[in-house]
Length: 393
Image 1 (cartoon, rainbow, N blue to C red):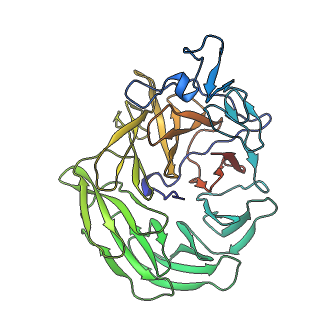
Image 2 (tube, one colour; image 1 turned 45 degrees about the horizontal axis):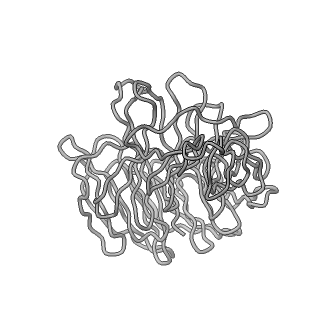
Image 3 (cartoon, helix red, strand yellow; image 1 turned 90 degrees about the vertical axis):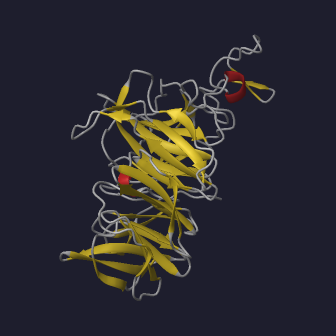
């Protein structure tokens, strides 16, 4: 199955939670024309106009209430996996003990890995107490073949290190790095790292050695750039600022080099699946320190840049929002978060890459940046500044 990868520019994405007494209300936002909104009889987003005898929605031949059906919660086929469905939203389940910090979640097998920006931690998905993998570990992190990779600041420079996922002695793979590594991806042989100040992609052998360049565009980049790779770390996409325009480039991580796929793109987050790229266009923003934006969209396209399509609007026409990010994809859906302007809540939404109406997965009453989410075959995992949660994806 296709996995997420993370977009550096929105590294601290927004999470949301739902449990008794702390969220879980439905989202009043609705899809906009041209953004992938489907009819109610096809997507189950409301009453079934094709069959007056079914006042709610058809899912196949069944007449179901998408606001309360545990097997069709918010949309046909959205199974809550044993959790309850209320107002079209599956209840979230806490994973393990409360966590004061979990800034980047990575799913690997039966465990979640995350960093507190001081330590690397392993949290069993079944619950229980999180174990410390390494006491000195910063962000970003990546996990591959039972090894946790992470960056660590060492004075004014940075080191890349690895440690067994079960715990053990840490090993330095590369040292004295500048600029700071901002995103990591790993395959069986190499660790790839991205430095957004210079829009550079480099690799270092997973066992340690001398870093080499995958792409080398030079350090004339000013502003925030982005990097995302697929789960197997075979292909990645980066942005590069050139003459006032932001280019989206495709990178073959094994062979090296970059190819421009979009010559001019607006972006606030990026995720890559095995067949498609997903991004968030912020729309028009007011340019303030904490910008207010409108007319933003979630979009997708093929790896070669063809078929770029808007999937969903981030807000109703004329309305604005303060934040959009936390973007991940499983190859079938895009998952993202939006905070409407002036609101204290953030909503996690899911939209089909093939087109269709987005649905709300969770609503969180705490605004602001949270740790990046993770996916496995069944759940979306997220952190709400107090606790790691899971919700049926």
